[in-house]
Amino acid sequence: MTTVFIISAPSGSGKSTLVNETLRTVPGLEFSVSYTTREPRGSEKNGREYYFVARDEFEAMIRKDEFLESALVFGNYYGTARRFLQDAEETGRDLLLDIDVQGAAQIKKKIPEAVSVFILPPDRKKLEERLRNRGQDSEQVIQRRLATASREIENYSKYDYILVNDRLEESIEALRSIIQAERSKHSGSESTNTEAIRAAERYRLENVRERVGPILASFLPVTTSDGR
Image (cartoon, rainbow, N blue to C red; front, side, top):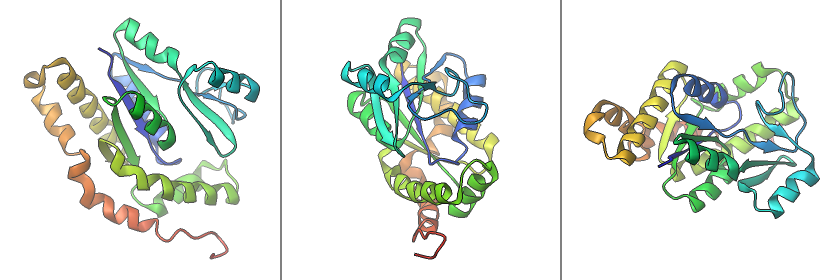
């Protein structure tokens, strides 16, 4: 049976690096490349980072019910095609989804047993630093992303697991443990993978609330560059 893993995070939290390393080192995972109507950035290639399609094509796919989830973000559509889940089920692989909180909510409604993981930055200051170091966004866009991040992280309690991505290697190992633990549970082989299950439990929502508190506080109040 295919297990669906949902990964969500504010832009700049290091989610893409974490997901890519997990896909490289964990066997049996199918990755869903999202569809979007935004223009490619930098070295992005169609079919690698995203499937870049025209707005009318995306809307036609919505009408045909071809998406597991879709959302309008910053004026552009993003969506996960149903065919990726079908492909994963046919090949006996698990499906990894890299989607925002809107998409995650839609997936959880359709697939309640999906495993959801929220990636948090260490604090607002570190997130802003990462966004600036990328060098691809204007000041207006950076402030908009920070404001969006403050709203997104309020949804953390809707996720099964929370990872604070302050040390990449630890975060990669944590995500590996979560995947291994959930696979063991779904296959009924918990007794053979107690180490991964024990490691994954440290990142369960109920076990990280104390650590999340200061992170949430660092995003309040959110101010723009002119102090408003």
